[in-house]
Image (cartoon, rainbow, N blue to C red; front, side):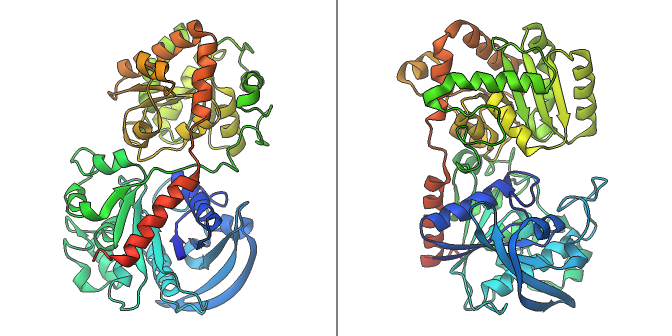
Length: 484
């Protein structure tokens, strides 16, 4: 099967969140099982610098802009990739969506409209490549216009649209809709119009043959007013063509036995070696080196969605318990400032690095005893999967993909050998503290039972292979039974 996978970011070339990890892993898994999956991504400076074997394959004129289409390979799996090289739109500092000062680029609608237009030309074999996919897999709002632009075409491929996070919708005004030159028939509540605004993500949801999101629980959650951001009615309407597929993780990149970023390789067969990574992590953050002190880790954006404010609420209790905490992330300036103040106050128990460091994220996963993930909502989440893979016991809220991937420690789950972490229900500090206290008490009194719990997590099949099979079924259904 020929698949064009459209994404606005892809690891390891450029990453702001989980979308990049998925885009860097799922196409590789699909190709591994015999598909012909090719990426298409914007030509940011980081992509042009890091992609392998880039060469010009086509030059296109798109709405007055000259676009060079490059072909190369992405990442360790050498996934075939097309790069939309349009310097006017993508050659700029900052991340893919924000200026260096942290504001949305004012021309984001134009930038990703162009990206969608080029993806459509490739999808229709009008880009001089002599290759046409049978299905286009679009992801998040930046690719939401692909399905609407393909809709009028008689010989179009099937379309699948994946929602990685419904909170980001790509909303713009009527003037932007006019400037983009979109067909006026698309300005309707059945297509792109959303409360008098242009909604990129609504276009993908409303006009793709199939729609999915990245966990079964999140698929149910976003059909409700609490999580649907006003699109719950549309998702309910499309329920027969909407599903949830739990993400996987890249076992090549996340493997404690062959991880170049960590101090000591380990596996289930030599699990005690994990303690060396704990001591190395304590040393790296300038904390007292003691394998018996419970060490908690956090890696992620410092925003309310991730429950970082809840971590702040429980920090005094965590410190009083004698535990340690290491954090890596960036985001809300007020949360960053609060964490830095606490780090200064508890410098012998809290270590904080503001920013993102891929190697350090691996060392936190390998060296921590527990990983905190108290998200208010979490479409899928990957860090809890990395934690399970590394024998680091996750503490998560029962939401989205966290609910689908972590089994709570109870007498029953301990007895039948299915427990993998600590799960709490309410998004408040007292509920998080209850889970942390449970984990600390279990850690201190359980002896070898803690290692059994951690190794049960390591035995879970979290690879992309199973998820890739589910996506293959979705692709085939989209082809055989178009949803529109």
